[in-house]
Length: 278
Image (cartoon, rainbow, N blue to C red; front, side):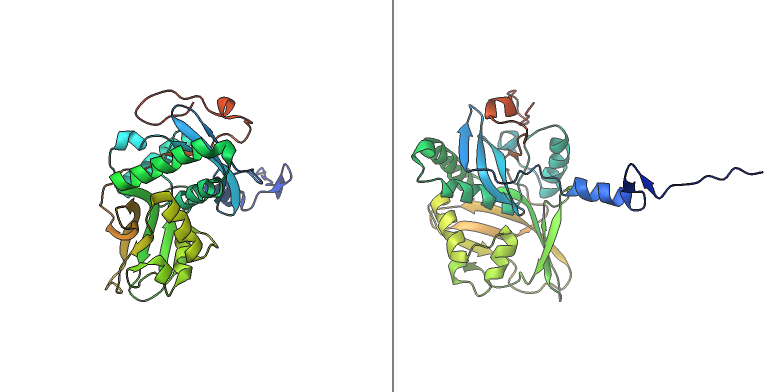
């Protein structure tokens, strides 16, 4: 008589059917966030930890490296995405997407009048301004322009944490406060802020108003472009029209351990060129 193998419907209180999909879904959306984190900023010799950063519907603490990632060396967006994957596993700094970059800027802006953190906020603001003026900064946001349908904005492109939104992104280049399509900026930055509020944050951060570059006409076939950030003497560029083989420098960010109550116990810095936390 043949043995019959009975497979249970549940194991340890969880349904077996669909278990792998649920695990992968949880892993994909893990960005190490915390609920109800108060605003604040702490500084060490090599990085800041900025609290109160709004990102993907939650409030979190973000570590910002005080130098460009990999000593300012350049990579394609695909290269920075590959770095992200290894960095996430090894507690290293990695490249932010556009919503996280904006979230960091807004968190600093919200603390600009806090006397207790004035020096640290100004140091972080000056670093971001100087970096954006010195280099084009790559993000892990990519625009997939479509010939007919709505375009796709991919955040955390090429990583386990990627997520997408659809919008009609094709339009004229513009000062963002002159836009006819404010929802484009809400999708790009994943915020409910008005374009006036966005411009206020960007102008405080860089000293100049925000300007959008993008494809102005529908492509004949699918066309993927990387999203970068830069500032010069008259504008801060939300640049969403560069080819995917473009190489740029990157900021370095990470999410500190949620179990730690202070930066000293959250992260110990080991100086090297890769931006590693241990």
